[in-house]
Amino acid sequence: MKEHILETLSQITPEEEYILFTEVPTVHQSLYAKTGRFLVERRHISHIAFGESTAAICIRPHPRFRAFPTHSHDYIEMMYVFNGTITHAFDQTEVCLQTNDLILMGRNARHSILETGQNDIGINLIVSCDLFESLVHSIRSNSQLPVTILEGLLEENGMPFCVFHGAESLAVRNLLESMIDAVICRKRIDGFVLQQSLHLLLCYVSSLSTAISVSDSDNAEEQLKKKIRNYLRTSYSTATLTEAADMLGLSPPYLSRIIRKSFGVSFKELLMAERFDLARELLCTTKLPIGEILHQIGYENSSYFHKEFKRRYGMPPMAYRKSNRINH
Image (tube, rainbow, N blue to C red; front, side, top):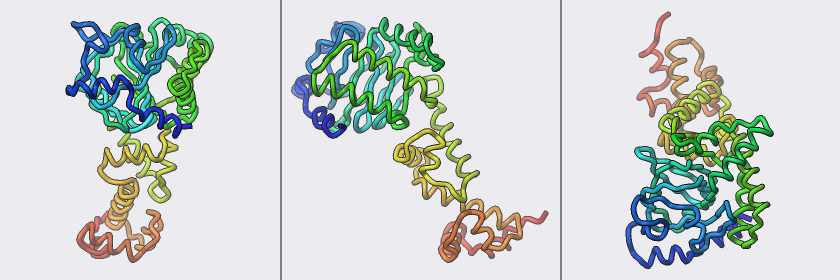
């Protein structure tokens, strides 16, 4: 289904044609709001070309090619990144969303969106605060799912946003693709079905355990780096990218990108560094033979180990042991 949807969403919309025609660095406020403070109103945006809506829900592509200046809105806004990357800026916090990520923004959120390219495709789900509140209330009343984060989006001084990594949940991705396909690609708008789909979507995201909110976004990267390092230090002999991803509740491709961004190396390189660091430690603190050390760290190629060890530390393993031996 995704290829069919991507083909439709890749087309230039009338809204984007107008934006490209004006040749300005950012989209113009007059397209989306009255003059004055840039407050985007749901009743206004639901009538913009290529947007499809019911009375309380609007689903539309995010306009590409220009930055979207700092603004707020009188509704709950969600953005699903169908393809590429899209970056939102909240005060001093930048949130770079990857493919399949879903961000929910509160009614008091004030943010901007950096310029996007042709392959950076986001879908806006615009929901009235009344409908969102009733759906969250229904979830809280009829299930054991945690909805604290969702409730915080409705509070006057609540958190501006929370992010869910859709790559973690096939159900979330399938449901969002079905909604996009029905509303944008096929123009089939059934208010009841759309509302029930939104209700189910909120149930799914409430069940995900790795949401990132504004309160912890500054530390999220450091927390994830710590979890990755802890995993490598306890599972160095058998560690795999797939196992690490399962442990963290992420998809392997997404985790691979995160590791590259956070550590500047691949998962394989990071694991190798951890194994050689442990080998160096064992050489200095134990009398274990080299073969036993190789076995403990999960390394099989003895000749490559000796060559790589010398490259990293400037001398062969046995010479390193003699020079750095720690007596107990």
